[in-house]
Image 1 (spheres, rainbow, N blue to C red):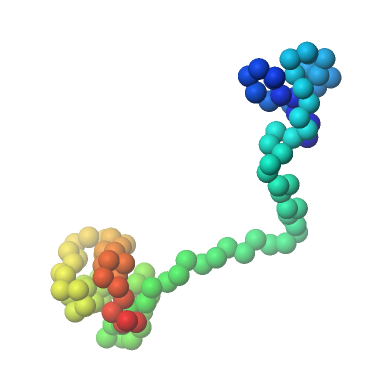
Image 2 (image 1 turned 180 degrees about the vertical axis):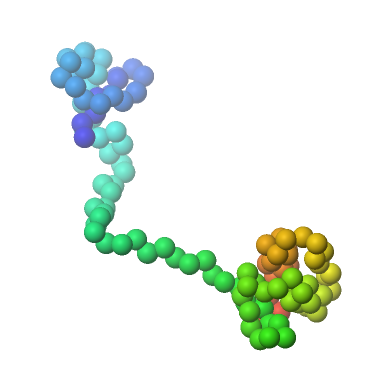
Length: 112
């Protein structure tokens, strides 16, 4: 794309023949020539989305993803490893978030 730049204000405008005749505008080629040209995108190639890493915890039933654990398993895990009792009246998602926050804060005791 071609652009015009105002000599006094530095503002850029899309190139048109009419604007190009204005004495205060000069052609600059691209809006920011310091930026590299974007790489071409293959639209036929499917986009691979990366899965979020899943955190596993050791329960009585073996290794379980935090998101798949029961409220009882999350509470037992938090008590055993962090000395924290969870409020099981909260949603399972809230309990899982609390366990993940404990793991982030103190480290993962099953893999240290």
